[in-house]
Image 1: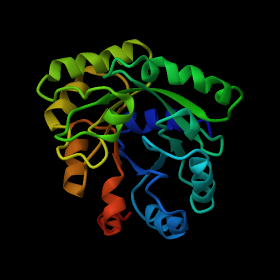
Image 2: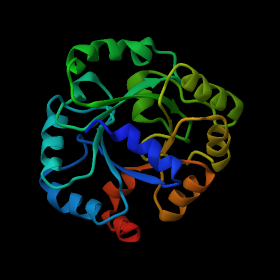
Image 3: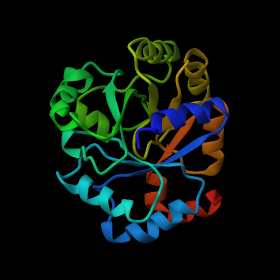
Length: 241
């Protein structure tokens, strides 16, 4: 399914907003897959993202294989490490943590991934990943040993996102982190979107339909929701087709 990025761009050009449900293999009980994915299928979700900052080896492969049995939605890897790459998915966000300065997460991990990606059928999508401060330490911050970008310096955030586009990134992902205390502000989303000519993904801490729609209205093309569904699956009820 090497049409994922093409379909995202087409949706953006048509004014369609996209919703990705993020499943962290380390926090998800695989026996719950059929019931959980049934709710995903009945919702307005357009993609399933799979990944996390700290995931046991082989766990992603097992989970993606199980999810595949229950949905036709595209499954996109959102990997925190090379060990989370599996050809059983449909696509891969090839994340470069451009908000930080740890070379391992700017290019090092990517080099290590090449042997796994040669000849793959995955739709590999270069993605500029920006971690924005949210009021608490996140797993991304702890694992990558990088600091989030200060939310009060929107110019630096905008310039970093635009630099990612100039470097050839096909997507920009603004991330507040799993279970964020504070959402990425509508002002930051709007300012970043106004400078980009590529799709914008926003995630971290979104726990209601109102917050999701606010992110869309500010300029997000794709909203990612994970923790909210982990903590309260009834959230799906407000997002039915």
